[in-house]
Length: 243
Image (cartoon, rainbow, N blue to C red; front, top):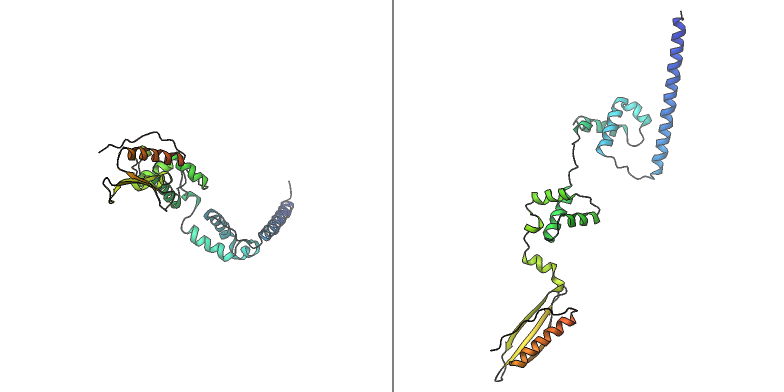
């Protein structure tokens, strides 16, 4: 039968060896952590709530004395304060919400703004615009966000006159045709156009002539010349009735 004293000696030696091994591992990890910390060159670490929760739970069991020996990222007081704030408020892994992550309020406001300023943009177009800005949002999320704000889909979305003008501002020309009272028997007429490539409106007087058949012909020629100058081909002719 094996001597009990011998067994106790072996167990004590084994326990001492394991304790030494653990101390060596801890010492190595501490040095490694300090080296990695020095590589940050004073930059501040950004820890999530999950990171704080994990450190707080582990640090609480070590206590302040051991934390002074092993903690290198933050101070022992900070870790224990995290424990009071996070663990006491039950910020645990079980409190995680399942399902898709909630879309940030800033992104929701951006979705609504895009839909309001661009009423002809559908969910796919808005998703592409968000992707260009670095936000990955699904079509269903965009649809739910707009529905919650009372904004219908594109086929049912109304377009205000102001929005329409803003969307076509660079391609709009204002025109007017009126008579000019002068001391002549038949009077004169004026045909003018207003180009609006930006917020500035430029008015060009296109010509004045006598109010007869030649006036109507001149108006048609002027409109066609203007269309060619703008790089477009006239597809529709407006006939002005004679008086």
